[in-house]
Image (tube, rainbow, N blue to C red):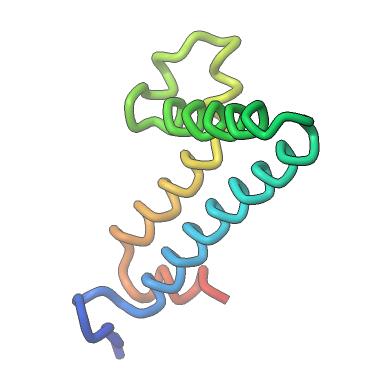
Length: 106
């Protein structure tokens, strides 16, 4: 039986998986912001580091530049980019059916 939410015809388990992936991404950036807030004495330096981290994550997430097109020293950022992993999880959840999402959401 496929249960769908009220607003759009997506399985509820897919919505839960999407929310989990997005919440983990937001939690990562919140933890990084708190780390940079206590690391630097001036607040603007910490803010600049958070913005640089977010932009690097966005740039190397595979949306603007594919991972194969990035030169090797910078490919490390493309491999560990939290936005890349969040986008892949959300894409799988969007394309998946209810039985796939049911096994991954616990």
